[in-house]
Amino acid sequence: YAEQIQTLEALIHTLKPGVTSSQQQECKDLAHKLVGSMGMFGLLEVSQRARDLEQLMKAPSLETEQIEAAIQNVEFLKQAIAQAQVTP
Image 1: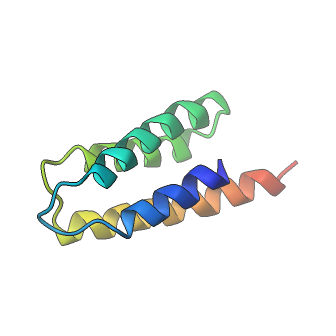
Image 2 (image 1 turned 90 degrees about the vertical axis):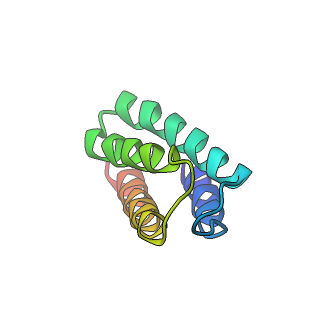
């Protein structure tokens, strides 16, 4: 899942305020996959943050604040996945 998060992070950094792009759709799709995967592993907070990200990406076009919130969500996901991988 770390690879998916890296892809998501790279895509989010390409988003521009007021512009709808294929990267936004890709972010939404990746976030949707993470919602289910993290829920299956019982990582409910991580799943919820992925759902929040998915909802942000459904906007017709993103404002700067939404992009910043998406970046924060991805940072949370990245840290949570890294922590889950080292926790026995």
